[in-house]
Structure formats: C-alpha cells, structure tokens
Image (cartoon, rainbow, N blue to C red; front, side, top):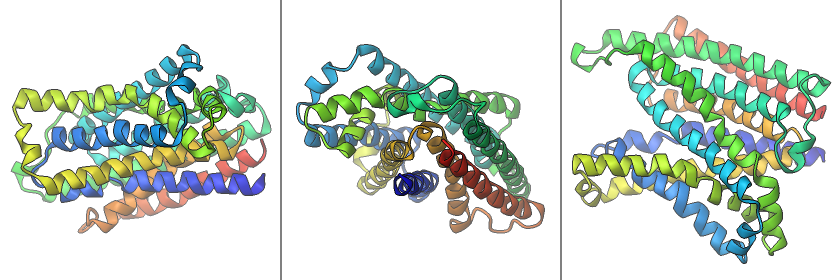
Length: 348
C-alpha cells in the first residue's frame, strides 16, 4: 500500500509539472492565433487521443458504456464542461490581468474547491470512503490547502510585480489593455469551475472503470475510458468555440498554410492530454483521499511547472528585487504544502 501511495504521489507530481510546462509549444508559434492552435490541440487532446486509446485497448467499449448509468455520464460531462469554460475564461484573463496573477488566483481557488469538495460530497469508487473534514486526515489536508493558498498568494504577488515591472519598461503600444476589475471577477469564476477537471474523473471513475474491466479492459485503458467520455463536455467549448471564431473570421485557410504550427499544436495537445491520464491514475493509486490530495498536489506542481517554464523561457529576464524574492518564498511554501497534503493522505 505504501509503495502504491508513493507511486500515486509521483504520478500526480509529474502530471502537474507537465501541465504547468505544456504551453512551451505556443511560444514558438508565429502565425496561429488562439482559434487555430486551440482548435487543433483541443480536438487532438479531448477527442482524438482518448477515444483512439479507448477504442483500441478496451474491448466492447460501447457495450461497457451502455452498462453505466446515464446520470454518471451526464455528471462527468457537466464537470468537464465547467472546466472547459474555465479554460476559455483563463485565456481572456491572461490579457486582462496577466498570466502569473491569473494562474495564481485560479490555482488557489481551484485547489480549495477541488480538495475540500470530495471530502464533503463523496466521489465514486474507493473515494466514497474518504475521511470527513473533521478527521485527523481531513484536518491535515485542510492545513495543506491553507499553506498552499499562502504559497499561491506569494506567487501571485511575485507575478503581479514582475508583470508591472515589465509593463513599465515596455513601449506604450505594447502595454496590456485595462479591465482589471472584470478580469479579477472572471478569474474567480474560472477558479471555481477549474475544479471540474478533477471532478469529471473522481465522480464517475468507479462505475466506468468497473464496467470497462468487466468487459476485458486493463486498469490503465479503463481509466482513459473515463476521460474519453467525460472530456466531450470540455470539447463543446474548447473545440467548437475556436471553430466558430475561424468561421466568423474566415481564417480556416491559416491551418492549411502552416504545417509546422499544426505540429506544434499537436504537441501541445499531447502535453495537455498526458496530465489528465496521469491525474486519473495517480488519484486511484493514492487511495481513498486520492480525489482530494491528487488534485491538490497537481495544482501546486502546476504552478511550479509554470514558473520553471517562465524562468527557462526568459520571462524573468530583467526582473529583480522583491518579485524574485517572493517567487522563491512561494516555491518553498508550495513544496511544504504538498508535503503536508501527502502526510494527510498517509493518515487516511
């Protein structure tokens, strides 16, 4: 059991780091705008990849799905639809209040909602046995979330200071437009909805995995089958909205003229899908508190991965003083929070 929990922690840490560093292909794009890269990458990540794996590796796929109560499938799609809306809102907030501040607030709120909810409203499968908030394990996990929020606060302060410093040094024509208040409201909503990523798996995985395994699927593809059906809700937003934008702007031709950027978008889609597959597997390995602790650890490592990408890509070049000190403090606190979450999981 201890090796399984350790394996689960490693898997969810990798999930968060991959998700946090996944935007690097976008930095290499020159021709694609949001609608082009989002359409290609999300179509690949949310539909093509999960369904290809499920249909190839899960015997009698549709018979297995048919044996799952319809309410479970609807619930999982509603959660992923919420996550899909959060993705679009986050992109809009990048422009209005900056990437670092958006990530900070979104991850803090997402961590609170995503960690606490499954301990109050029990999820499916083994997660139904999750301890209550008032238990020793529950209180330890809450302490871990509280420490994480402090870490995210310092990361947000650091990001805000960094972007303010960079904006002050940028030419006037390149400065970001206003709308800070609206952006702040949007990122709060996005933070709440972002927990739908973990919920889409946690609240449906039990019956779906059981059905897939009953029809001959192995553990890992059975977990992917959860995402295949659940991510259709997210695809409604993240695939259809970019398609609408390209239709409105008459920019479908941009896709055909940029094979290299299609390849980069596919890489981004792969890096977007891998964290979902790893998150689901890691949650299951972590045991009864996996839905809460797994999501919390992913949120923390997502921030760390994003900051690592920022350092490597030169986003912190020319930034010194308090913003750098604050991000170093944030990194230490975030790592501490994940240690506390892991301790809480071990007490379950």
